[in-house]
Image (tube, rainbow, N blue to C red; front, side):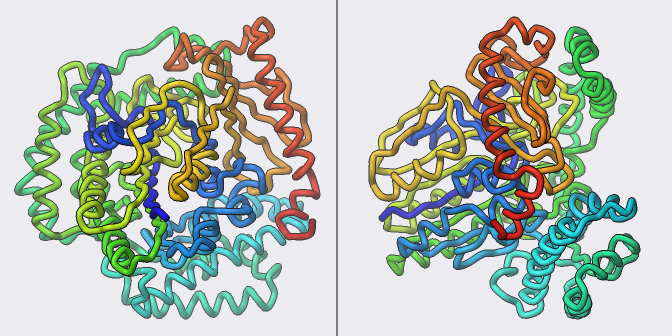
Length: 589
């Protein structure tokens, strides 16, 4: 059977790939690969952030089929690793622990951490909601059980990483020499083990201690690993001396282009003022923030500040590791599946190997960048730092692909796609960047290379990321792939905040090629016109500047889309409404 290499570039929107009327392509390798691959012009993910999007990406299921959040991956019926392991594939994966659990690497033989684990997101995005209920004396027994599940999972990941760091395990081989406080690992591990013992003695009492002490609680306060100083002072000095002038010139160019291209769209502002007061305020705030970008230092920060902000490792480091593993498996004639999650493009966007001290690697990255910047046209619009980052990732993928092509003998299917996108090009300015319904949050690239297949560009029709899995399974089984063209794509995800979907608004959007309708509704409610927050005619208003919500009664096509969303909403409500959610998550159904 054919092997499978799956590269997911976090946050890379369809618009970030290829040439546009206002820019040359920042992804020449993906363009070249596209010319000999199966590629899609209208592929859409189901959610605008990683944790939710991974359900459809890695399991081929609707995001909310199993309750969303970490439960979606934990309870999914199949994944690439589970299916291919049954076919005797060796399965490899990166593990980027953020607020996702280890469930997304179940059935994976070899995994490597691409960042240090922090309990801060658990505190901020999960326990924070329940703390408010605890302080208001409204916490239920069921909610304590959910918190226990969340903390159980977090402690498992944290202990796994700390033990691997202490023992120089393979799981942490990519971050071993990047952890700033590596000498503190034994004491942090001891603290976590002791806190876990206290937690297991009385879980509810321990959670109450967390809610009461919060910032001063021992587990949350004293278990932080840092990965800030990824580049040595000598290397930073080398970059500044050899490429500092170049980066300052590019920064000037970026700021000049920002000032030139950002014009107030008064019709857009008026439309928001009439239809969505919250977004109107957000848009005014956005325009003010964009004025600050006229003097931004995002590119220069790539030498210092952005490196410190970046919590993950570079594409260079990850792809080198996987190349060595894959070549070894190929020599053993062992089938393999490799899932590689690259986060260089995700904020803050980085445009070189920011965790490498090799002068050869640094020189190679910057020489390429210098050539790329020369191609920026006078009518350029967008974000130079984003395009530079896309260019860097594109080159890293090129090197990786060429290495596999030259040093392996057995056939492989090579996939490049994204989990979601985001509006990083600043055109038009968006009042909301994340958890938004704009096309650039969902429209993703998909390129599937198979040396035995001719080039096929799918330009028409609508496709969902849920279907990528079956396409790939057909290809590695050497079957004719089935392309499921949909009459519409449905976007669904649990919005930010509480991880109990039975008590919060669910976010939906539906797109049929003409209209897009966005809805927010709780499971106890039905979806009707009152729950609609956005209607756009994407065919005539590609940038989605005009909200047609006031014309909703006159648009029969939109009414049909609302009915489809309502049917899906009822389906989810029947499965997860009220107490049913807890029974499913806690394994009682």
